[in-house]
Length: 87
Image (cartoon, rainbow, N blue to C red; front, side, top):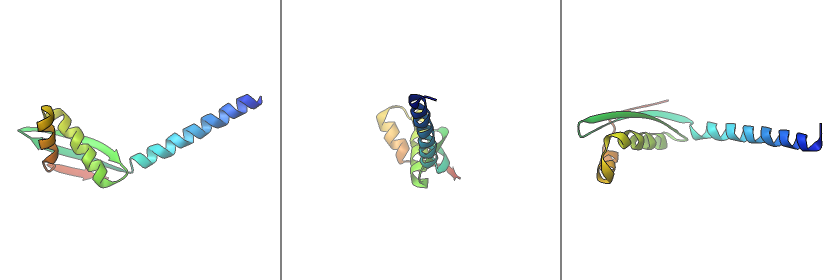
């Protein structure tokens, strides 16, 4: 093998390992969060390094489809979740 081919192979393997490690760190906790807002319900699953961050992300995602406009988005996000299930 040529030196350039070896360097390319080493670079690709390093990148693959780095992406694998980073993706495992991102979603150490996964939570399903269900929100009820103005008679509508939606559930979303989110992963994050901590439980609090996963719940927060799940709330925002779940509210995204049931809230209409910025005010509703903030109001929905301030509403306690109907259910939370983490693993």
